[in-house]
Amino acid sequence: METTVNKEFLGNTFSYTTEVDSEGKALWTQKIDSEFSKWLHQLKDENRELFKVQYSLSSNAYDVLAKLKERIGVYDDSLIIRAITITFINFIDTRKGRPIIKKLNSYKDSGDLDLLKDGDILKKNLYFSPVGMRDVEAYSNLTGLKKGQVIKNALYSVLLISINEDEEIKKFWENEIIEKLTTIVKAA
Amino acid sequence: MNTLEKEVEGLQFLDKLIAVVGHGEVDYWEDRKNPPNLSIDEFHQVLYRMDEAANLKWIDRDSTNGPHGTTGEDKCFKFNCEVQFGGIFEIETKFYFVKGYFFDKGDLKGVTIQSFRQEV
Image (cartoon, rainbow over all chains, first blue to last red; front, side):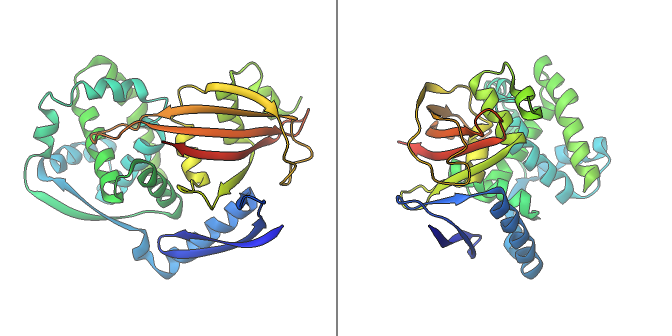
């Protein structure tokens, strides 16, 4: 049975017509996904602020970030932090990066994280693309972290990886993450 | 044998599912009545974090709903998985249930996810 279904996203409603079964499950197809993407782009054109996420980081973390920016050759904070967030969600914190994340956990109490968190707190805003916002929103829903915390989780984790001296983590950083961050930043 | 079939040839079930979701069509039945009402975006995020399809079972398919309901494989897969999100925050392990079927029979083009929900 074809029915009009409403999907809430960022406080707005996307309406689409689709098959709904007797249990009330609605079919989401690639065609609907394309329509949803188009709708999200229009939504961003109308109200860019909906795609803004506020987050905070410490001045120490900002200093480490500055070194990373220099290494990659990017001067815009938003570009690098967006790249870090998306790389963390879609690559590092997945099955592929699991061994590194597990290893990183053993360094949580090493003092590096406390050192990174130290210093003045800087409040910042970050704007996401519609695709990026879908990833952040889904990660936020699944983990229960607020969107600002999703950025913080990604940022501090990646910065911790960047300063870690463990051979395996360093190899992952040099061979995998740097390349991904550079590709995303250059494509922007 | 089409391109997608060649790509998944010899893969274990979970790797096959990941490859088909990544490179084929996905029909996703979103449960809008029973919370937590997980979307296709959440399904993607969980899929790429699965280490194992636990209690994997193949059962006869009853439903013929959807665009591939009549052309899909006769057997449905269903399994459980646990997912651990990482990073500097402590995030508790989550458990999920997945049920679906590949389509078309004899000419792999994609997968229908009939059910994806979090289990307490």
